[in-house]
Length: 281
Ligand SMILES: [Zn+2]
Image (cartoon, rainbow, N blue to C red; front, side):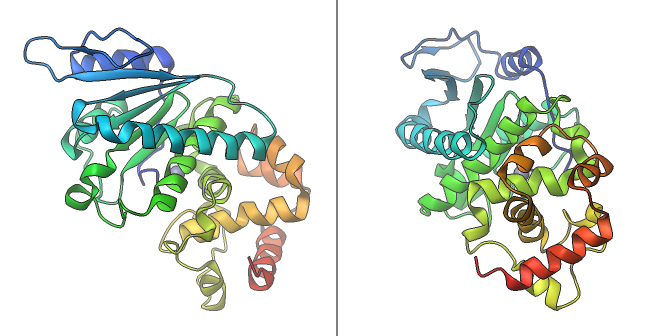
């Protein structure tokens, strides 16, 4: 789940800078978990697993192996979908509570007044993903079941699709892809398997009730946004083929996508509505 607010990108250097600014911790990277604490600061632990660096606090030590499994499974799903490895390494940053995650987002996104909705538990950018520890979801989040392993798996895969997309796209910045938010989010929903989950409002219902978008730019909005955007990308995959999806990763505008597909917005949406009504999953 990405926040409704702008998807933000920060460079590797900026990300590391922000992390250390925020935590006030001078931690060295080790392959084994290590602790280093400065007076008055919080303790952050670091683990490196292959191309992934994990940052977490002691309270979440017991869930780290599970998170590593989710990340590796998601990596396999994404790399086999796109037939390509993640171009760069990335960081998985597990926050022990809502206060610390919100403070990080405010600083990273330069939105000092940002208030996260309770369903916002993670985000993804080219440098990595942030995650509110599932350990505190019952108290500090809504709409997410911390005991639903498949749900957590798909959520982490969703954010990792954002990482992959941002690393491959020439802008390296999902924030700049806001006008094609339906493609950014639809890709993450579809590749992560979230379309199969019970959490999404049914896009078929949107079509049948006349609530389907008439403009692509409106697809990533409202109650049906996950199902609508996810099936828009599924429609492309099933109609135009996987190679087309891979090539669309570098597109940065809606006209660019439509031109590449050789269609118009109206025709594209009409064919998608038909696809949704005939799609038996
Ligand atoms: Zn997202």
